[in-house]
Image 1 (cartoon, rainbow, N blue to C red):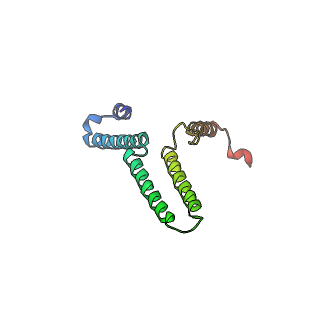
Image 2: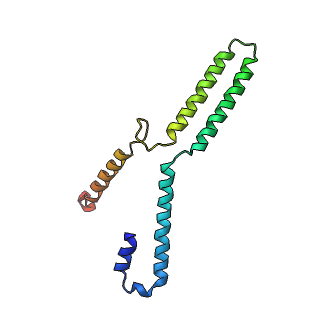
Length: 136
């Protein structure tokens, strides 16, 4: 909203330019709706129903694997099933951890540190007094 107020104050005779104001309002509200969508996606990264569907599919998959390997006459079937179960459960834990990479867990991205480093580099670049003539 402040962008609209600044534009209205800075442009001369803005009251006479309804087409310009409508276009500006449309652009600002479009940007605002995009920001709102990003905020909503970050607020709930993995919908609760998807987590339950994934857990149910994992249960069915492991049940079918256990039945298929239980019907085998091999002594290695329990070892194979244990390995398969370990892989599937680790994939589920990994997907749950990666569903919110910007949280406060130990495995999440250090976004705060990245932003501070980027701001520091941007300030250094803006305040640099380098003159290309000095290098010649």
